[in-house]
Image (spheres, helix red, strand yellow):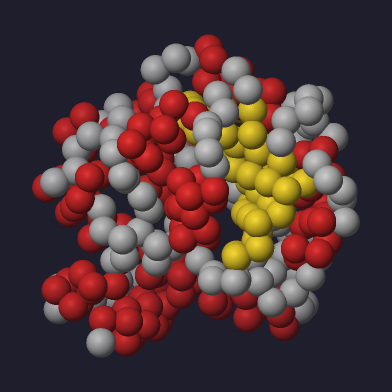
Length: 280
């Protein structure tokens, strides 16, 4: 089963080098693509400095899901046996590429396999949750090439404005591109032998606080987007996924309200304001 690795990166000039180096250290001569989406820094230039084995796709228009669609369905002329996706701020643990490939070989009914977080104060919690839910983490996961080919043939794409490609890809994998009544958790394999490290956040840096604030708002937008996607998946199935979710906001905003938990309320309010602006 052939392998292709795609690294998706947005403003990752400080970390992209470590990510690429960790992938290059893996055995095999598989192709490596770096998909740079809407970046304003030197991410693309640093990726190119690693030499001709690294193919850089530098898209001016941002958005991870939009770039995922463009790379997978518009740029690739054919699919490999296993497609591995990593985030540009993740360092891949040794042996992860082979482990993810092996997970799909050994589980022929699975459409995807997920690597696990290996550092951070909540790493063990996330690992336990992933094993229980057969979760897919966007930092490192693999998708069977034949599954991507079926997505392309059925014209099933991620909404371009979707926040959180991993959640929807996991759902599509578990339903095998069918409505939610066909959901099977074991179509996503959590691979304990594949993992990634992310740079720990420093609470002493103002940039960390700004990044975390923006991230929390994005998580809230993702929460409300997932409610819309769940309705679509349950009623009509993946074939009804829209090119963008924003046109659906107006019909849903009257039913959405911030969650009451103090850790979520303010960010939900800001997310709903953003969605209201996008709906106009």
